[in-house]
Length: 116
Image (cartoon, rainbow, N blue to C red; front, side):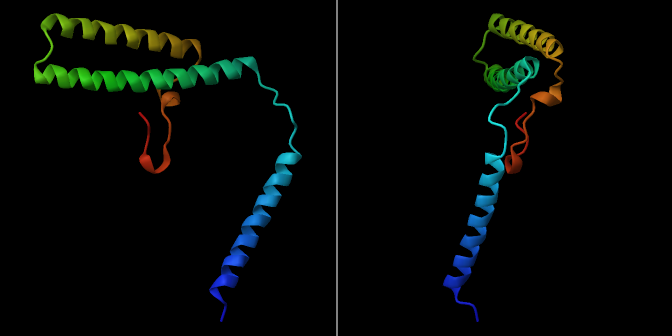
């Protein structure tokens, strides 16, 4: 019979071996990353547009709750509608400019599901 303490030590040794192999792999990687400025700009645009889309959805949900609650005037509802429409149009322009699709703005959060 294997002592539970021995089992822990074996598991720890395996983890340390894996860590050592990964550390060696990282050491052999080149120190500099050759980043294409276009890829960096696209990645940054993707991140920013994802955050903007998330905030837009949150604001839209809040606006709908306020509309349903009757706390907004007709004028405020009209202004919100125009603002959301303008934002959607600008988002579409920026997605086209950076070659992004709607799916590119969605993040897989693993067990939590998709971000958008």
